[in-house]
Length: 245
Image (cartoon, rainbow, N blue to C red; front, side, top):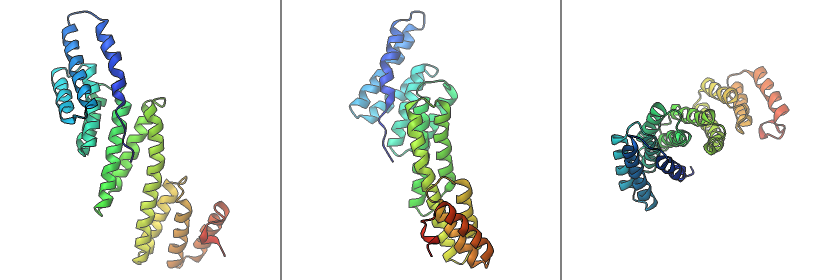
């Protein structure tokens, strides 16, 4: 999984210039929020994450509804993610979406939330307790980034992540299907292989899923159905090892 440096930093000058060109009774409050945000950014640039977190959390507490608070939540999502605090990262992104649904940093925050969900799924695999719900959540979160703003640079990153995640999910489902077939549960293996074919038809794993369906059907004595799947596999992937005579 790729680490992402925070793109929120580049928006700081825009916000600060906006504060400088406005006037009114809220100037001092907005300036204080800007200064607090600037301090957090400075701490980030020095890689002092603890200080950055303190500045951003203080900003949110004192200026909850300000645009700088939205910036701070996006930064906190990234900081929590880098610290392995994945639920907290997702919570910050969700709060930003709730309080500032049109904030320019929302695509980035949602992208961080998606990465956090994907990491949680990978952690579940490493523990030997696979939770496909987490993978589907990550996929949905990446999709939300694209749907929010297809022109945002994080939309392109999200599309790439979705493609890679789709392959990973399909391969994992096939691994589970093979294990069930080896355990003698051909019917369950067949269901999982069909699931991959139906839900990930553009996956590179499709041919292997069809081959596994053939094996499962033959184990169940369904020779006619196995032959039909074999013909389909030969039609779409004639070079697949399962249809080499």
